[in-house]
Image (cartoon, rainbow, N blue to C red; front, side, top):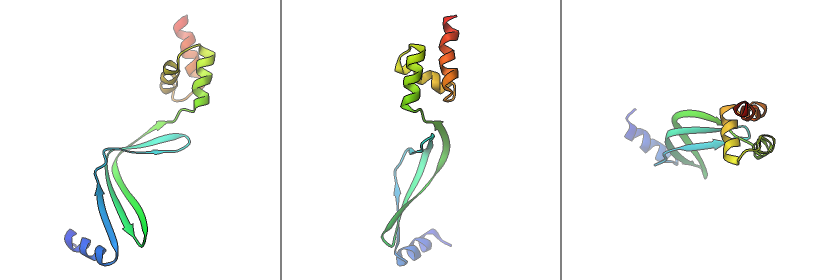
Length: 106
């Protein structure tokens, strides 16, 4: 079907779509961030409800909990930035992050 015909039919059915000029979409869960970049986002309004269609390249990042960062800082005697970097390198493994500081001291 022709895209213009499809748009016309959707409008007749009360479905409106709007393209949103998004560069990146981030969805945060308790354990990770889902990052879609570059993102193509379409806002769809139908029967008083709004929804979004998102497409693009997806990658994930582990979310670091504040308690984990503070524990690494306390046990390793390091700065927040150093603790965050160590947790990132260890994939969120607290023990491995702490041990990484002990290895550099030896």
